[in-house]
Length: 322
Image (cartoon, rainbow, N blue to C red; front, side, top):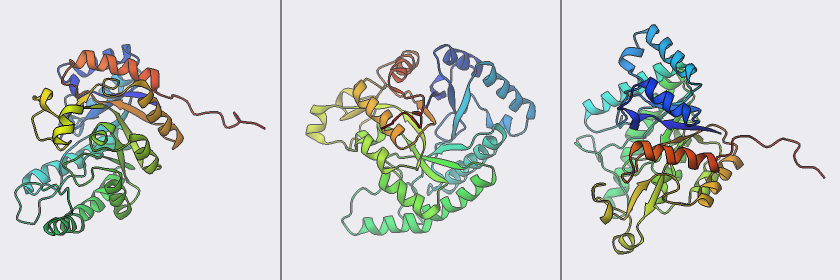
């Protein structure tokens, strides 16, 4: 496995400044934002799509600092009920696949998206319960009429540009939010669909990341290193379905944290070991969303912590003998 960083939080620095700083901290790979909910300050798709010189310059910059690209990220909602928003996010996905081909990247990270409850909806409708009977009917419409048809087409588009891995981040608020829904879409669409395994979004749902990793064997295409801390008092009173602003951190049932600040070293070592067990040997990409730390401090601490738990090499085939 390699240590990677999603460079989006470093948007106040130029690509060279960000790459040089990360290289100095021992980072081996970067995940670059390409649009959607993710800023594109270090990739500039509008430029790269029309300038071979800009592509060459980016490749040279990465080589200068001994960095590879773990994935391109274009988190969005391409099945949004607002047609203009959906079309814009779909085009961002297509453009990201085009850039991925140019840069020799085979993995694109995004969200599954979430439609509304009908063709006339204005806003997404995330269903979280099985009763009243309206909700199963909404789910059937979302999956059979919108989500599966969209991703079947999107997978073909990705493949046409050499993108073999669409890594969907399992995120509440979207149709794919846990291993079960990820595997459901993968079964319907095919093996181009896989997971961007971000434990932070699973932890507050009560999911054991190690169990989830094992359940997703063969379907994990990218990994985010981000932690979550559940506040025991707030969660005990109100549960974990929390709609309060992230600015109200003291009142929330859970908040995102830098790795090591939500769970201890043993917890993260167990995750890395589970990834090794299922044969995952790609990047582990740090995503900084800790509201209690600056970007600089959060990434520095996360990189040092990840160095202490990541498993870099596969075991030798002949390491066990009678």
